[in-house]
Image (cartoon, rainbow, N blue to C red; front, side, top):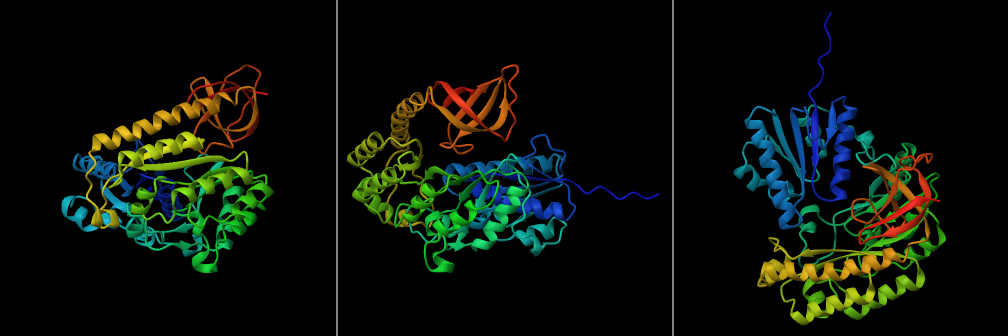
Length: 437
């Protein structure tokens, strides 16, 4: 009796941001629908084919992507792999270079080539599966990408060159995708895009993020909706109104300000000045007093003087962001900054400035965490690690923010993916510690 040959396993490796992760999940969903054997980020994988979803945002990310490709090419040369394919942002922007420099790669695809990749891997692209994904995050949370590309012209950013112009997804399609996720057990959805606040302008001729939020908020059993990557210019105030109206929209906003000095903001082409930045933050905190505010800053942009940097430090000390990350400037080919400015600030100065910002932020984070001791906070449990259950509050997004550590106690039953009231008993710079109340 003949038995059907088991298909070779395909390992999809994802580098970069959560937007890339969603692309990988869509690829995995298509492959699984074709009855192909798949896994995600398998470290000790027996897969003979690997697809590397690359990042090309900044120098460090590009280096990581190239090194990952080279590692897998070496494994192929050693007979551990049969095929190595590359997709994503790096291959979109540097396809010719990759073909020339790493000819051992079996196929290189850009950011809009999902149908081609599926075909090469032995499947048939199924249009009816648009919105379907094979979730790689824990069952209780997922990312929802509401648009592609970006219309902003920030001097330092290559994303519009890679991903193209802003393209919103229709509300109906997003609501359907969110419902699919909730039906599979998702309780928390993170909205992501290069620019959330521009959502809808291209297809509805107005900023439609507030209305989209209302529609998503109406989905039963969706307990938390979280906003990532807003843009400060022309921020739609209606978002704050919806946030106040709806309990399942987290009082949380990720809005990269990048800088505060008028000189640097002008050179960055951010479309906003220092006074407007402070006014916007004042409005956030006036309208939603318990808002948790996350931002990202960029130091070492060409032309950033010591005075500009002093203004940035004062900004961090004054505003006291709940969460903050820092990048150092790296010159990206064909961007406005690369063409108009010389990258004259030494790397050691950039790194020193980033370290100074983070030192200030660490004290702010400690003060804010210590202020939560004694309070009882709604907490979702993400995983078990060592002798602790690890969870998050409304103020924290997965991977990037603080966590709540709850030590195992006999007689206390805690389930991953469930919400619990947790009384905070102690705190440090990055974590809270507590007990189920």
